Image (cartoon, rainbow, N blue to C red; front, side, top):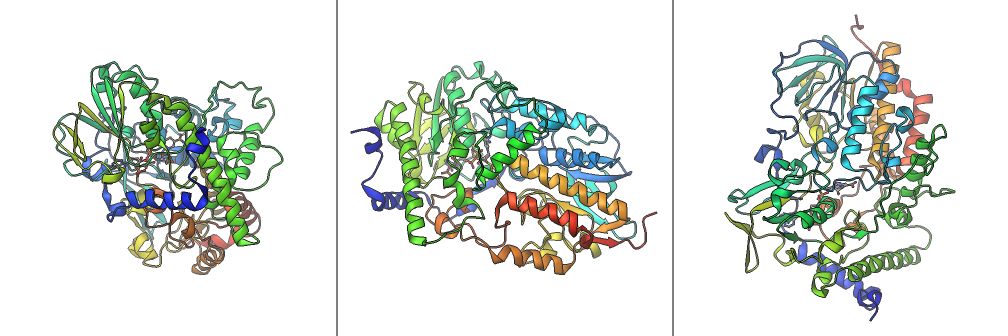
Length: 602
Ligand code: NDP
């Protein structure tokens, strides 16, 4: 039997049946409630392994032009674009000890970005930096964040190791009062929230998780003091240790090969296997990417966005497994439509999907020598039910004698943690170290999770103002009753796998709003009518995701099997069309959001 035959159930009906069974094995009644918040319940921000104890400083009571909450790429880009508009005082407030956001906290061994670095790293044209690898290591990305922040002079006013605890609009002065956990209560004429989508680590609510007496941490707080080594490996502290790792998502897939090289023994506790496609990382030169031409990075980034947004492009400049599989990602995009003859379209789509998944399952068989292990590593669901991952080192790691794959699907994950290790089925695994690669509360940080209370006109809390009907915004950025507050994120906005591109377009927009308000001595505040019109526009063409996600194995894409709600959550025509819409609106209609200040600003 050829590998492809071996991984292909007989026909699409059998495949559908197999997918259903695999989903049913994993759906849990507690859905998203199975997780626990690492910040509030386990104090994950209390200790910053990279910054140490923050230096004492006096609380601030001054006034700045723009306060930005969050110093990841969203906040840095907001700051940089504000500078380009001539804004003098921009204060970025960041929980971590430096800029970088995700790339500040996630320094685990093997950390890379699997989106091509030449399109992922923002402001390459502006900084003149050309990445060294097709897929950059985390440290190169973190340094680039610092590079952009330095170039745009964002350090002098920045507050690190500081969390914003509330934002309160002061009607009298027409400013926001920004309170922090370091006792600050400074004022800002404008506030931009850029609190990220992967900033709140989560841990599984496994019974006994607090009882483990060995060493334990989440991958976003890698403890090199314990493991030794660096993000490149060399973890001598693990050489005689029994290490368990929970989670085989994009993070697990990057970490596990390095753990396998360094640890005494690695137990990989898998619940759902990821799709692991070809990575083919390589060094690149400026010539490879045409970096001698002005605007090369912008052009490449636009080209990538077009392709992964399901639009046509003359050329595929990046040409990797994201772009060549982009057709299969369309179902995740708000712009996805069942076109023409629905039945024929869906049938063709399903066939293409099955071919891709068979190719990925065959990849496991071709690499992993033990047939039982290979079988457990095969993903049985439609492409992109789970976030696709890419690695050429992951499957070979399972051919090592010191790596054991423990399948936990039948028990819906690890059943119990004990003092000495973990229990799955009838087997207790004794461990010295237990690492959680269990991800984040995706898309719900800061303002949206309610952890950052925002009080607008009349002291009304933002989430209260939105009420049961859900968020009300114009373009996802601004809300009536919350003047000069600009939200960054994917809510009622657009999204893409290349999220830094999305953030940059948002930063450009935010800075243009501020510049227009400054020029007109006005406040930024949409009318209720313009919010209604935006929500109606989103709802009119809201995509039907339900049919796809309802059949997917559980994960954060489908709220752990409960399905992704349909509705006006994102711009339905995709990121490129959204960016065009914003550009046109800035040129033709921006005045609609500017309100007269009463009293006028002194
Ligand atoms: P994920 O949420 O994607 O994965 C969490 C993993 O933990 C899953 O494999 C999950 O299994 C498993 N898990 C959770 N609870 C249990 C349990 N009780 N028992 C056993 N297993 C359990 O987190 P990641 O950190 O891997 O990735 C988060 C996101 O970060 C990615 O989706 C991606 O957007 C981003 N990322 C991007 C990278 C890049 O290169 N661009 C690199 C790394 C991350 P199950 O699937 O069954 O729920």
